[in-house]
Length: 357
Image 1 (cartoon, rainbow, N blue to C red):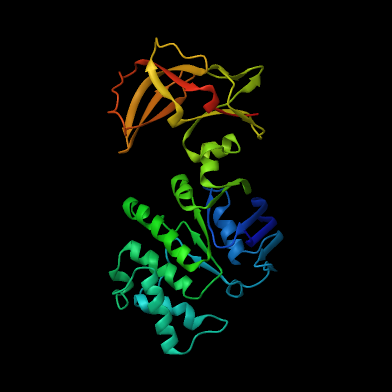
Image 2 (image 1 turned 180 degrees about the vertical axis):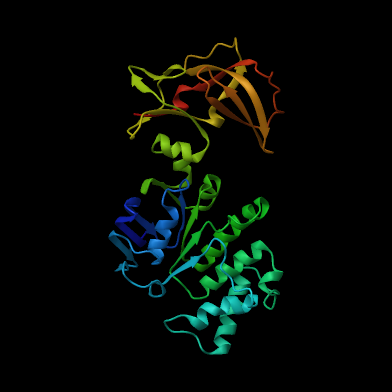
């Protein structure tokens, strides 16, 4: 698949502190790309550099084969949807959407009939038919989100940058808008680069997920690969679904604060040693249950359980004081009841662990 955007060693610092420490990435044409990272990792800075709101200190940005670092934002052919929507409260839904067409610096559309037709098509595309004449103050958060997106898409950009576009919405609406954004993108055939701090949102939305850590791309992969095979202990930590132990490999074991854990899963080279086991790969058993030959066993004291509908997450304290989490899906059985501060065996298959060396 061809690349619509290439970043080559892009760097940016503020007051001598690096925000982008040499970004290299190629974003595929006609795709949905999630950019995931913790607060302060450089996500919004990278988006602003691509859009042209910030100038990089070094490196190259190529868009559709043309170098654009130094090109003004309005000449880049890249749309931007702001986190707070940045809509005009004194204009109607249709007027907000028409604004970008009528007022763009290059080839503004002055024919009212063309503007009206383009706006009407876009209103239908984003599911706002019947709300054309509503004031922005009279529509919901999800509808404002669609207006902001329509205002960007009506100018026919080759790429759209979305800065935490679902952050201002409630949980139910956020889930629904995920599917709607993907559908709208597929109909338009443009690349979306969607910045988020939510691992579930990034995995649900992106054909490709880029993980940003301390100003660098820590991993670029499809959602399934990222979830099952994070490239480092830090990436596994961002995904918020792995128990991670520090330590080091010694012979056939990983020596950790809770004892020697037998090796057997995937060992991959990484910056920092670590041993990771996903929450949903762990079984909770009576303390006296013996593990099978291909299993790893530790002990923990039960603290509490949390229900999320389809699953229950149980929390245990280990002998070194750390909290260990187990996710149990409820599709086949009722949730178990565990004794508060009771001791249990926490067991997983050796091959399910990820070891970073």
